Length: 254
Image (cartoon, rainbow, N blue to C red; front, side, top):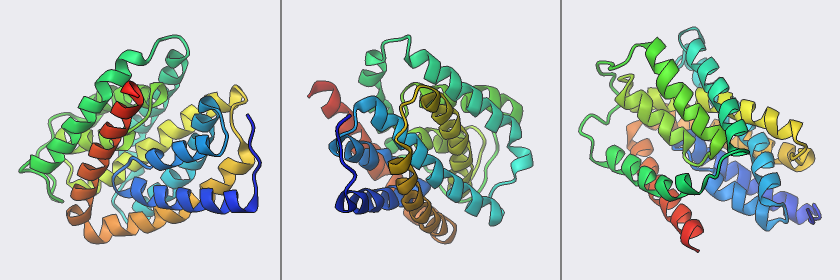
């Protein structure tokens, strides 16, 4: 790892983290900005991913805190899903060290386009709750656990996958789904960070600096979710899904 943390670089990465936190709180996909920025700064891919998890914890925590304080999320109803997401992320982080992720890299761009298409064309996309397809317990052991494994194994678009699961399976309105997705994403981020830290991959000073930027951006983005709801979430999710798909395709074939 060869990089020098100058004042100019620190200021730039702080600004990138703040923008990423804002986007993440609304639609997910902030890693599209932070991971390339960390690698551009001179970090190896593994170190960039690990440091990104640290700063992402800041964004997901403060977004979750805001949503909980505003009453969009009741933690007592989400305890099992949080635990399953945490365990899933740990399993995924362990598995990625043993399994070739190239197959998933090829499939993921298609999945991201499917998410964007669902949010764009679904007639049920609103802030109103609908009938749930899965009980909270079943949801926890399927969707929460499964997306948790994915986040530990690969990561991009985790917030979008959680939001889609809450909308399509739990019957949540879009703003409520986004709020709950952020809480589960914080759980998976913490889990993955623990394993990266044990491996000595985290650059703590840089990650801590970006964590502050993420926290500011996430708080601002959370306020937009509460005040604007579907009007801003839907187009941004679609946009970020398309951008993530394009970036992943470029990385895969480039």
